[in-house]
Image (cartoon, rainbow, N blue to C red; front, side):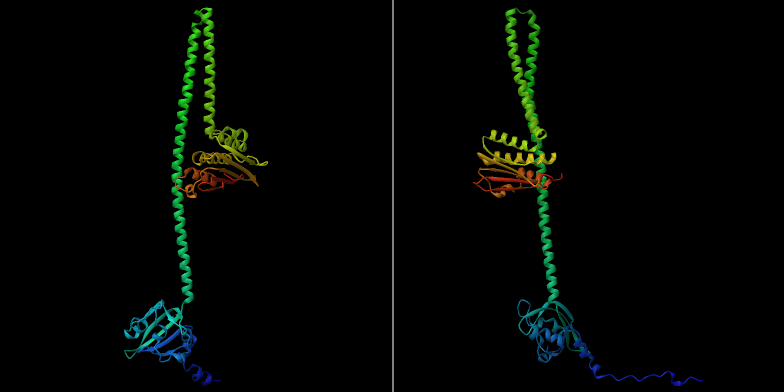
Length: 400
């Protein structure tokens, strides 16, 4: 059977409904941006509901009104915005399109909001007839940008502070290292001088006495009984003198060894070493001592930490001796829950707080560096006329 010619039928195009008769109006109504048009006098020709709502009006109230005088009359700070400087009007006066995001529009109630707008000239048959302007409220964008800028500024400020702190710390470490090297060299010089002056002279004296005895013993056989008796008395005196010289040499050797490393730390532990050092100090400085120690049954800390605590204590006492001009010293040592708190208090002249933070306060820096190495801390409380209090706090289980 032949195919019917009506198998493919083209349907007539349906006429548009009334809903589609004004596509421009639909477009303006559907967008969230404000859109308005102005003629060559700057008067509003049309504006959508979103744009009118943003500036506090309804569209019919704006038609025929000068949009610059209504919503763009002033800068953000309130200064007058001359119409001849307005980029919106330049779009149709000079045919210059623009896009601006650094200005504000003003609402009906006198408040303003940051806005991003663009203005494009409307050209008909080669003639500029006006301009169309789109704009959007960028308050949230500005707020986010300001917050981001503040965060950036704070970060940069922190970086500057940290950089300065690191530079200061590095400078202090270098100065402390140089000071430590100077102290080591001074200590080596002092020990060499003492060995030379003290032990050297003692050993020379001993050698001379031994030579004298050797010579006299060789002459002994040639002397009479009376002379021999006299020689024995003289030799006895020499032996007694040699004994005193040997005792002095032993004392000097012990003192030098103690300065280099106190053997009491190895033999009796930290607590006994601290008490011994305090007693030695007040005896030489002619000061009264208020001693209080409550270590309970705490075991001695590891050897590196014990040595650090002892050296810090020595430096605390050294500061008292050099600067305090005190006549009474208080030492309080407490161990609680494996945490040591060692406090040295004097009744001396004191000093302002900044004196202990000075760049050349190497003794204080050295104490603090030792403490920090073991996770400890040193607090100093002092003021002119009321003495100085230094307190070391460190965990006895600190790892080296």
